[in-house]
Amino acid sequence: MPQLRLALNQIDSSVGDIAGNSEAVVRRARHAAESGAHLAAFPEMMLTGYPVEDLALRSSFVEASRAALTALARRLADEGLGELVVVVGYLDRSSERHRFGQPAGSPQNAAAVLHRGEVALTFAKHHLPNYGVFDEFRYFVPGDTMPVVRVHGVDVALAICEDLWQDGGRVPAARTAGAGLLLSINASPYELNKDDTRLDLVRKRAQEAGCATVYLAMTGGQDELVFDGDSIVVGADGEQIARLGQFTEECVLLDLELPAAASEPPSGVADDGLRIDHVTLSAEPVAPYEAEYPGVVEPRISDEEEMWKALVTGVRAYVRKNGFKTVLIGLSGGIDSALVAAICCDAIGAENVYGISMPSGYSSQHSRDDAADLAERTGLHLRTVPIAPMFDAYMGSLGLTGLAEENLQSRLRGTMLMAVSNQEGQIVMAPGNKSELAVGYSTLYGDSVGAYGPIKDVYKTAVFRLAKWRNAIAAQRGETPPIPENSITKPPSAELRPDQVDTDSLPDYDVLDRVLELYVDRDKGRAEMLAQGYDEDLVTRVLRMVDTAEYKRRQYPPGTKISPKGFGKDRRLPITNRWREGT
Image (tube, rainbow, N blue to C red):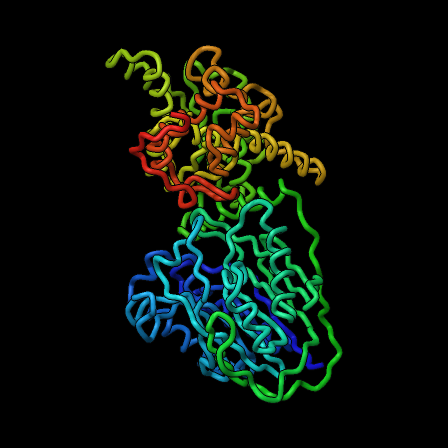
C-alpha cells in the first residue's frame, strides 16, 4: 500500500493578522518538509483567523485573504518547499450567483491546496452551521464540490469542519469518490465534554466514508471562544490511530499506509449533488520507507483540568491578542476574585497581575487578610485603598439607604478600578460567575466593570470545584496552593451590609445551579422542572430573577465560553420581554 507522511499542525491563529498567520504557515511548512512530510495540513480559516464575523462582508478583507493565499503558494516554492502539499483554510468569494439567491462575489469559508508555487485546488465549506455561536449562513455561501487530490498515489478527499458534523454531503461522497483518506480541517470551539462527542463523530464518519479520517482542529482563543485542539486520526474501521492533546500547539507527524488510488481518477457527481473536483498532484507512490512516526494517543484530562485550561487559554488570548500585558482585579478576599486571580496568574504570569483591595466599613478583617494571603501565595501585586472616605462623601450628599447604599460601595470600587486602569494601562478583569449573572446578583457599573470576565460561564458550584482542584494540583507539585483555604470555606458574601451572606438573597448554590442549568443551558421550562420534583416557589422565583436580569447581562463584558450555552452569542433573548414561564 502507498505510504504518506502527514504533518498535522494543531495551532493558533489571530483574526485579521493575515501576515502573521501566513508566516506561521511558512514556518510550520518548513518544519514539515525538513521532517520528510508529504502533506501538511492547517486549520480552518488559518490565514484570516476564525471566526471573522462581519469582516467577511468587507470586500477589502476578502481580497487581502485571496492575495495572501497566492503569495503564500509562491513563497513556499521560492523557499524550496514547493514539493510539499499544503492544505490551508482561508476566506474566499464565490465566482457565480448562488442558487440561494446570493450574488456572485459572496464570501466563502474556503480552503486551498498549495503545490509547486500554485493554488492547485480550492473548495468551500459545504455544510454551514447556523446554531449556537455560529452564524455562517449570515456570511457565506456553501461549496458544491467534492474536492479530491491525488498525492503520491493516494486520493485524499477534503472537507471543512461542519462537513463532518452534519449527515450527508462530503462524507458519503468521499466513499463514492473512492478516497483513501478523508482530511477535515476545523475550528471547533471548546465546551465541556465535547471531546467525547468528537471521537464518536470521527469514528462514525470514517466508517461512512470507508477510509481513514483526519480531524485536524485549531487551538487558542478568540474573544469568547476557545479552541482546544484535540485533533483525531482514525482508521477506516473507526479505531484510533492518533489523538493530539488539548490546549496545546503542536505539529504531529504521522506515517500512514493507505489504499492506492484507482487507475482512473474519479469524476462525475457524488452524493448530495456534489461535483467531484479531482486534481492529480503526484500519481506515483513514494519509494517504500521505514515508518518513523506511528500514531500516539494522548491521554485524556479531567473535567476540572479541561475547564481550567480553557479559562487560562481564554484570558491569555484576550490579553495578548489585544496588545495588553497586565491585568487589574479587585480583590475582596472572596472565592470569585481569588479564582480569577489564580487563572490570570497562570495565563500571563503573576508579575503581570495587579490587585486592589478596597475595603469598606462592612468589609471583615478576615476578608482583608484573605486578599493579602492570596497575593503572598501567588506573587501578584497588591495595594489597599479603602473606599470609606469616598463612601462617606457620597452618603453625606445623597443620604442613600438600603440597596442604593449597598450598590454605591460596588460602584465606587468599579470607578476606582477603571481610574487605575486608565492611569496605568492594565485591563480590568470582572469577577462575576454564571450563577450571579443568571439571576442578576451583580451591580451595574460596579462589580460588572471590566474588559473581560474570565469566569462568566462558570457556575458558582464549579467555582468552588475549580478552586479546590487548582489547590490540590499545586500541592501535588510541591507548590504553594494559590487560593486561601478561608476563601473556599467561608460562606459567600458581598459584604455590603452587616453580616450579609449570599443566601440572604439567593437559594443555596447547589440547588440554584441545578435549576439554572435546566433553564439557561438546556432551555427547559417551568413545568418540566416541577415534573422533576423541584419546589414550585423556588422555580418561580429563580426563573423570574433570570428573566428580569437580561438587561444586566447584555452590558457585561465578554468572557470565556466553556458550557453548551454561555451568555452571549449562544443565548439571544429580547431585553424587553413580557413572557414568563407558567403565566
